[in-house]
Image (cartoon, rainbow, N blue to C red; front, side):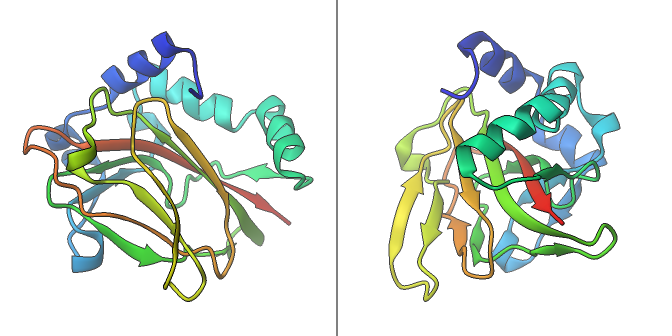
Length: 185
């Protein structure tokens, strides 16, 4: 577990409904990013999610990440470009890809992805696992179910291929995560 159980449960309960998120977030409809909603505007986060966002960007947490990863001088992204609240509805997907690795506006390089899953209930048969592939996208190295309070941290590069297997949850369930990315100069 990444957080104390009570904190994870509170965060999961603070997620908006898919309908609420669709009113304030960016909706993805392309076949390679189907039924995904992303909210990057921190003013749209409820109290617990806003606190999580602040914690994950705090100097104290950055120091912990530097210690864990061995990557010095990590920077949080206050714009949450590509990050924030992610929700994927039933039959959603995110094909295998590599992420953008450079923020032109800030002139920083993306180094780490942190994904925190906040699904109160998730069954393996519902799919939705994040998958980490080799650079030829021929070998699946790791697959992680989006269980409540599971954190996946991985280095971002031009060869860090990853994706999400098709989400097959019931229509009234969404795959919920909070994503943040870390950078260096």
